[in-house]
Image 1 (cartoon, rainbow, N blue to C red):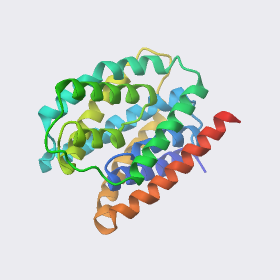
Image 2: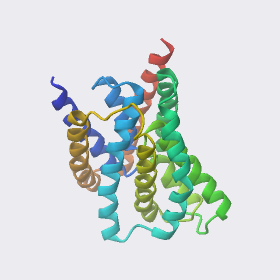
Image 3: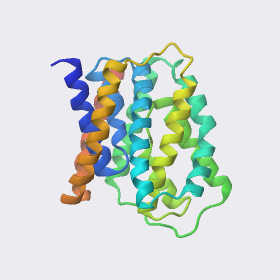
Length: 247
């Protein structure tokens, strides 16, 4: 199978997961780039940031039209993560491939476990500014180093820490993810890792289109069923990546 077809298929599956589940689908991007398309871990995290930025910005515009983005709360959360995201993006290229792969596998496993747990309930009141900025900074660092959007972390944080309702948290998380991913990507602009646009462009395009199909799929099938299937598949991917590091 040609690289172009693989990129289109992988992008479509990633976008489908993003559209159907709201958060967490982007963690498929890095393993797909490494194991299907032959990217090094460092190059994969850089390419993933391009894909995540484009798909998140597209989804953000749709949620903004629906009025589900809380701009003030999202801006505070995102601003706290910009510097850690940029620092993480700069540090990522210096880490050994095995460290990046192992760290990503652990985060993917965390995402899977988080999806298998019940969704958080809104607390009704935001936490203090210090806790909000601390949580936002932590999410920014994860995005910068590993090249993931972090929706599986951002959504529950916006619910439990910021006090948003679930629907608003999903829309607002896209603002946070877009800002953090862009900051991390700009921090990598001066590094030796170049983006292979012949692969990344069709991957990103397919992901954007797949996200719209995923949104329609979510309306037809049980969200809980889709999330459990994806979570178990992601857990298997995480286990395989850890085995790759160990062996």
